[in-house]
Image 1 (cartoon, rainbow, N blue to C red):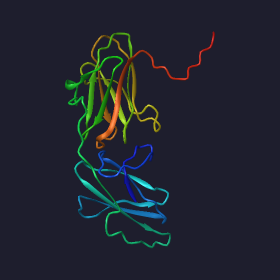
Image 2: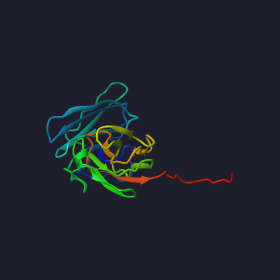
Image 3: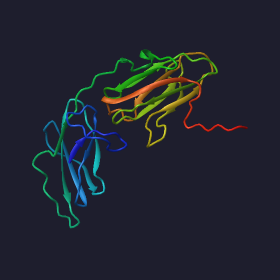
Image 4: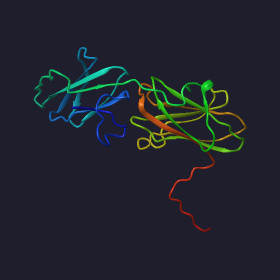
Length: 235
């Protein structure tokens, strides 16, 4: 069994050794028996059952912890005859979740704190803290089309993008995933009906997931997005 921090799409690249920063952890264990029984504990405390009765086809499980705590994991198997092996006496995988640091745009957790972004600009963000939100505002001109989009998602990144009117409460548009499950970034395309200062809010799909590595980039563009390759034909 190993403790790794991987993106939602599955393992890719070498595992990150503890300590970890993101609060979402991927725990992997290769099971020969038919059923796996897992336990976890926090800060060296009592063991608790977790993710019980898992078939051997499942080699991993997601765990979401809290910053500032150490977590241990252990596993045992049950064969087809119902024979249960003993749990190991100590943790087979351990990790410590560090505290994170807010990005350069903080504090921007509400419409009154929204940071200004201009057409053609981008901002780098992370989610630091439970239910962290990032707000921006931009000047929109009547009749113009705007594209607000997230990308460059870091480990365990999964954004939800909501566009609000100038009051910061009226929802104009929202998008979770551009193309689930392959692209967990978000994109909103919107045409302004009048001049004004719309707001955009970005949050993580699961507000418990945070850390320095839970990053994304936010872009603002005017006009239509072009997708390559383009095929142009004569009329």
